[in-house]
Length: 116
Length: 116
Image 1 (tube, each protein chain N blue to C red):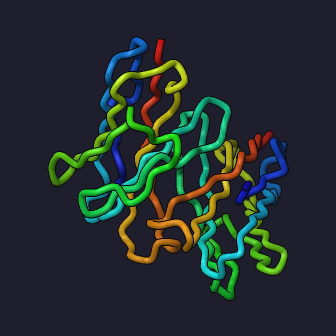
Image 2 (image 1 turned 90 degrees about the horizontal axis):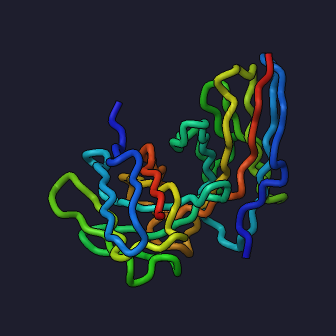
């Protein structure tokens, strides 16, 4: 069963604007972790931000913030003040307690293109 | 800043040949993973490894695959007899925390494997 759904295959955003990338998940676990990774065209996977299921506050890391709505099972990534270097593929992933040793399950990704 | 490294960055091999992909995880990390990403598709979990043994493996990780930690720093993925469908980007990742769903996995830059 699909655990992570990213419904936006691609998005264009203008430089300096904010962009929200959608991520919904499907689990009955009470304890889980949600992660966002960035994959530039060079191919590496860069960790951006983490949100735990019990965290009451939305996670923030610099220009990245996570809009976590547990009841709706969504964990949207917000990138503020977009830069040209933000152009990349963005993956949402979940780690479940029912999966041993933190196996990450990834969504299909959203391709973001930042335009001048 | 410590990082996961992988060698080679690219590997081209003939179908049926054996390949070994190498990874050096972050030095104080205890949990190691391999993932793969077929071109244009999502990242898929292959195997997790802790305390010198496999913790979990996916259905992709069949008898053609094996992992090893031959010394204190390297972590390898071996594909015994490569098939065309093994062509993918292979990522190594590592993490250090005990709580499975909270651990952040840091990825290496990947090895692009092309099987001809």
